[in-house]
Length: 499
Image (cartoon, rainbow, N blue to C red):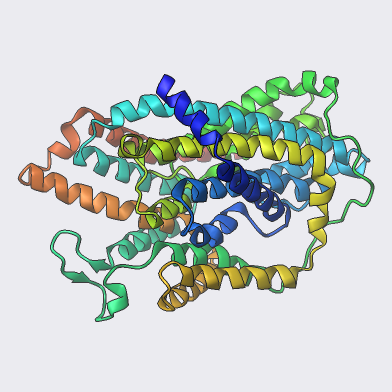
């Protein structure tokens, strides 16, 4: 423990970590505050620009963007009733009515404090929980990692809900993409079609930029803004003591729900956390009729939960190498770009990097707390930036970022193809995140399976009989079966009501 604290303090003593975390947090707030632009898109587009940075510094910058972006979505949700990010959708339900009646400052203040509490508590949970999980994970072998990969892929059922077939197709295509290139064991080319550019496999970063950056630009083209701007001045931002006494229990419930949602793999992220927390708060409230009309509890529940998913999502990412949400999956690309792989060995081989991430997450939360309370009026002005200018900047960054990965124009073509593909998938309502899960976890599942079978001379039973691998198979079964049981119960209840 003493070594851990000394590592954390030494990381926090580096000025460049402070600077790039602050820069990322400011950028994240700005991006999050602009409707249509998300923290996911910002991280995807900017990952290549951290390539020449020291890994600790580059990841600190991305953590700042992540944290700032999740918080920034609340600004436009409150002032315009247009969520800047999907996770702020439920913030708009009560934040905008408060702003309309002249309480925009109070609403932003509650959102800022709620975001800070939920996010910081989740980071503390990450630091404490990860140390215990890693001690166990260091004992894992190939059978366990194969079971973990399957567990992560099974979460597609949770992510896609009713569109399970679309989700499975998306995930399967992602797994296929991960097989392109030279076979890692035999060296034989797979699906390269004679192209030298494909022998090393498809670069992860241009795919991410296309799916989450360029596709969003294509989606935004031709769309007109909706909603009404709140033109009155933003007043005092610090919540009154009466508000604190009213919503502190909401903070506790929202934070716990957010951490739980974040820890579960499947790219559900802040949107699911805020949905669950908002509904839970409405159920326990003595005045549920106030929700949707400007209830402070609605803002507190949504913001504490969606920011708590940040720290929760880093738990499976750092300890097991399994993404907890879409941005965590993108961050795996950042690790890969620096020739690193998240997982239990990272704690042994590069503890400075792990504690650098911890430190940057802590800093980012304090930065957005100060910036949110002191400069909310400034960030609100970014809502007036013309949309064509923003989209032009994004396309430029997408192109430069794709080329910068390996100074190869082929990656620009990859980005364009996946940008168009992502746009088409959005139009037909086929989820993109399962493809990302398949691309990340597919190679992990393949290498672990082949290694296990080679080590144990083809004995398949070893995949299911070891204690920890059996544990993850049980989790996988539960993840697939329980939602189906709930759907059947819901249908029966609906049928009973009709009758």
